[in-house]
Length: 160
Image (cartoon, rainbow, N blue to C red; front, side, top):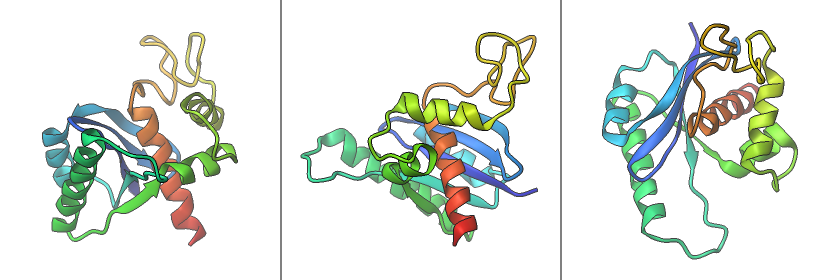
């Protein structure tokens, strides 16, 4: 099995997604960062991708620096396993999925939805319902950003 474990880092908790290279979401969610370190250590994945923080010249606050520290912790945990984490800028995610650096979260979510079959129930069949889950059932909150990082990292790896 070839899978990528992707993280949308935050100051206290982070979104995550385990994405199979065949286009299957194997799991996703949001967990406290301390728990994420354990998840990284035990992940059944060949690659780790983390969204990298970028400032673009704007002043940033304490939260951004704390998030950067967690990115370093996540990378070090993966390094202990003998791997090298891929760092993916949000701009690269926007360009890959939407073709525009001006894309917003709603555009990214829609681009992800468009990639998956409409096999579930409900208003958004790609996500589905509990009784009729779709391929993205369970993806919510920051896990959408983690899925976007996974899809982009996989594409960048294949292009290299």
